[in-house]
Amino acid sequence: MTKKSVGASPSSVACPIKPHYSNCIRTDSGPLLFIAGQVALNADGKLVGNGDIRKQATQVLENIRGLVEANGGTMADIAQVTVYVRDIAAFDLISDIRESYFPSEGPASAIVEVSALAWPEFLIEISAIAALPS
Image 1 (cartoon, one colour):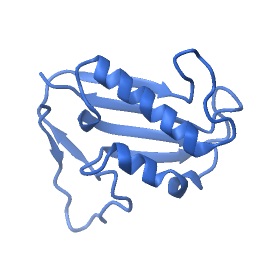
Image 2 (cartoon, one colour; image 1 turned 135 degrees about the vertical axis):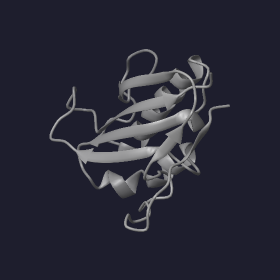
Image 3 (cartoon, one colour; image 1 turned 60 degrees about the vertical axis):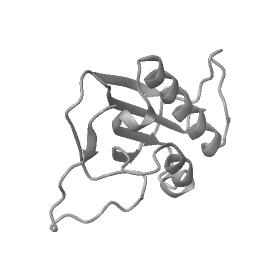
Image 4 (cartoon, one colour; image 1 turned 30 degrees about the vertical axis):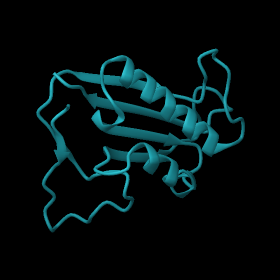
């Protein structure tokens, strides 16, 4: 099991505004797995959820889960995510989905609205860093 815990957060820093991420994560684990930005493509390279941010977010997180598990980890080993969305309204629209993948002591996280992703159909992309078990 990865030794990952929520890092110290001084009283001068506000608590996270969503329950599925932490302000900072501390880890003493082994190798790091850097996961490239994942988009809503299934194993056949087909778009999942055209026009549906919730379906796309689920596919993206399933892709990340698959990559982490293929490398000997779990979603609990994810230490950091960067979420790129075409519309910042996704911050609230996908919050429950993210919480189902990161239920407690979630990763350090940022969400950013961007004007475009690699394909015009993509509404979300997530990159991640996992601290895998030694």
